[in-house]
Length: 154
Image (cartoon, rainbow, N blue to C red):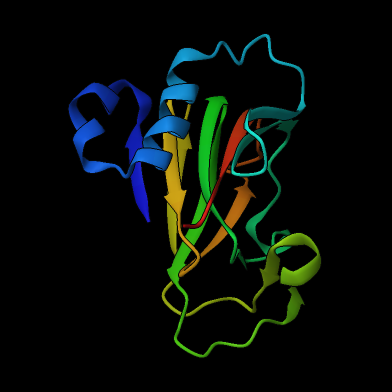
């Protein structure tokens, strides 16, 4: 897992793999305040963005998840939310496995979960070995506009 801000990309760019950097540059250069919700093509199924708007929910209503085929770059355009994070234990079995159909598996509450707070301009990168629980409210929850860039695993 990586947590940073898009404003730091110029200083950090040398630390990212080329495909992650393409996704981050897309976030840096695109005006998402005007982008329609839904899927936005970057490089076909290898790299694409999902724009969404929602009100985060209490953490207890959100399910921890992980992916196998894609890395998530979760970027908050406006608002703020918490994202729970924990490493995926070796051999952990999902409570619900939809990896084949939808590239998502849901897990029981992970031990040692840490809450990351993402406000406007922040991003978190989650790899297939990271459990993450996005969309968690901070306080009562305020509207969030978010982009998730999906980067196909090499």
